Length: 309
Image (tube, rainbow, N blue to C red; front, side, top):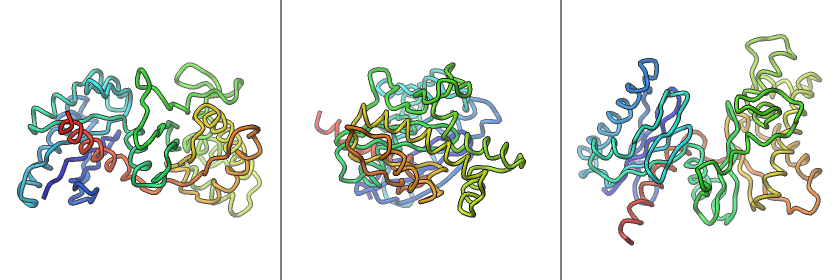
């Protein structure tokens, strides 16, 4: 059965699959990155995982994978196949495409994790059928992926869509990027966790706990949540002013709050718009499999490009 290898490399774990031409997941697996052993060990973990996936396909699907797609975090030079900088993994200028190609002997596509997840959400997830969409996962940080006609716009230097570093509160908290009041310092799941831990006096409280407290009517939680939603709406209106997307897809941990997030967020965005057209604001559909599915799409895209060339 014809298939490709798909790998989504995170800070501590890797998700992988063998993906058929119609997007079917023919085999799924997960494995630790082993980052506690250093950056070189993580590279070897990725290469070994890919080799094992190739062997599984040969044994159980009757043939070897035709290509591989890999999604990695940090700064990615997709055109040259280089993982430029991934702080959580300790990577600097890792030629991942070349290394993987040499190990498994097939063409390899490399992509940025958020843009790869956005590719999957846009084509086969919550944005399916939307010609213009913006994918925004709200997790430890906030990033974004700009979707145009089924593809993701990376920008001239690979930085397009970094909505988490739009300044929405100039007098806000310091951000590791060097600015103050960036969106991700105020509206990420990590930011909500910090704010709710401080407001509740429980150092272990997180964003999910805050959402539950909002649902029960806790006034402190409502205030923390309102502040985050207000900041998020400011960032989204800036994005829709620039991009005019038909759909905004919200994913990541904070989106798991469901309508506790989406109802006030839609209202806050509607209050802020003036001339802009309101987009559909919807939850992501693919969960934590988006990056892996997107990596599979990258691999199939690579094969179709080679055939057409």
